Image (cartoon, rainbow, N blue to C red; front, side):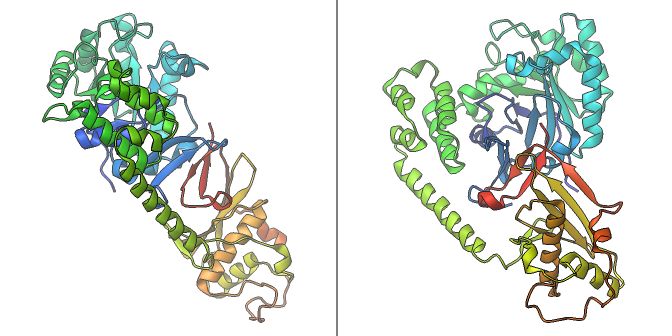
Length: 472
């Protein structure tokens, strides 16, 4: 079992809207960050994407950060929604401190601070429901007494750590951070406390991080704007020039196909008061990542990277052109199989053939697990047979068809007849007709799960994307 993420004596990249995307997180790790928080399988990009029903990539991650990335939720999502994600991140965090309207709308973000009962219920449910550590990020309350009461209740939920932005929800960066509140919190609880809020007046370089930690008495420090301006603030050897950092950032943005407008935004934050310089003006006028590369002299890097990505696409497409070849996806054997009823004219379906084979061999009967995605209500099923799992990569119009498709995958991998038209009679299924309908009904171990955005591996075509649905 993988060791759980440790939140003591670490330097952390804070969650930042529009800034905390994959390129910034990877660059911060390169420069020395121990943990990176996100903003509120193998494929072309070698990433795992979590995609909304409208096809927007909500969260992109990759193997390099898997053991150190914390996925932050702005609002509470039912546990099944996180089961699709927890294998790709190191921890789950709930944002309870963001004062922006997009967070507080609907009573989430900093709005939760006025509802301790809800905070406690959310955290207890998450701690119980996921296998990875759960943390939360809060702001301080108007009184120290209320603040300490809240953090003690949070500690009792079983969270692994608590990040504290040392300002009230109505205070902004121009207001001084309340180090005394953070210090009191650190003394009041036994779990790690991560101090946040010192970027403007306290943390400008790596050496300042330790000073901020001492001033707050916290276990660890979380950096936001100082890292947004120059991620090399995490570098123990000292800051690098903004120009060098921007070039390295842009390489990650190209490598992981970051959206051009997000790339522009992050680079402009690094330029700060130089945004009206010739480079800044060229950057602002750029419309694509290729345009941006011209300003930084990275045209050849862009072309080389695009050629490598295209080669991966072609290799993946070649694999897709051989759908009869099974592919191992984690612990599940998959094939591109669609159940066409007209191809199985007999009275016995693939499910029946698989069931009869298991009975003949005195094996445990096949067990089916089915999921449905909300955007088109299509189904995908996985069958477990003799401890091994089988699934089609294609989605079906009904639960019954999805189960038949998974049975076909299993039968083909095992080299067994499936009842297809033109198939030589095998004698596997006897003449005694069984009521197939009864076998189509799920038994106690069958499950159908209904979720609402999805996890996509970009190697697959739209009609065969491997997705795990989860609700908003």
